[in-house]
Amino acid sequence: MTPPASPPTPVSPITWLGNQPYLLLSLTSLFWAGNVVLARYVAGHVPPITLSCFRWLGTFLLLLPFAWPHLRRDWKTLISHWPLMLTFSATGFAINNVLSYAAMQYTEALNGLLMQSSGPLFVALWSLTLFGVRLTRWQSLGIAISLAGVLTIILHGDITALASIRLNKGDLMYAACMFAFGLYSALMPRRPRTHQLSLIGFTTGCGALMLVPFSVWELASGNATLTFDGLTFATLAYVAIFPSALAYLFFNRGVALIGPNRAAPFQHLMPVFGSAMAILFLGETLRPFHLVGYALVLAGVVIASRQTPAAVRAA
Image (tube, rainbow, N blue to C red):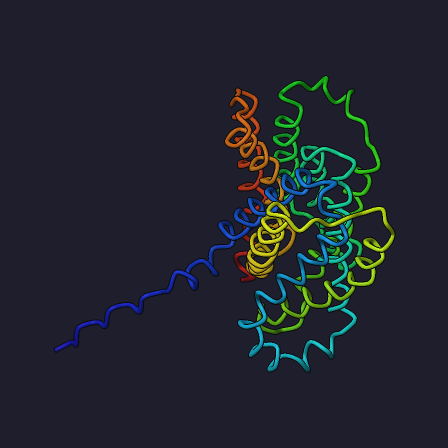
């Protein structure tokens, strides 16, 4: 007599979430979109370098109790790859974040969200330059369709509005931010084999340390002041938890599961979420061009994330 089959082992919600790359990357874009909108809102209230420094210091302290056992075990591996780890810390945390926050002092949140949509192009450029990795036809098509959706939202469905766009200092800063983050994304698959809490704990700690002297200089220069009020504390709490601890854990895991070129188009969701926040929280009206833009962005993400038959055979 055949014994009854044992019931399947229940999967914890955290384990399930850790194997859902599309959901992880979508949540990452949601948190990062909120970060751009918030950075614009507090521009002039919280200095950009100091905000970046406190962001990563807070994230490091928040994750340290969970990351400590893994950091102790993986320390030798992390140190043996110190040039790569310092590059991660600089491009993914220190340089990238300071430039994005500084950019919001000079440009609008929607401009930052638009510049964010160039992220997949920088990832593709770095991947091609460093490793000879070319975009597939589906990835190229998906990026193009998503970018068309982003432009539809930003331009309110009016292509003639392109003529009114002017790049200012903030826009150029945000482009430089995306250039740095593109390198971080392209290098991520080459990270050392460690627990992801070890990786993010090390890089956030190093990123914060890199920014400490610049933050001291910013506050000592007399050109910036930091007021510890409710808005400041709420800002620091949000940026440390959602676009930092959670978003980077989600982003790193998503890239590990599907690769940087397939993950990069999810950045096109940021303008979608950003405009949705404006509709929900600022009372803006949902219009037909929003729906068209949403549809194009989501279609592009699905197409770009498609796994080719060759990739399936290689998996």
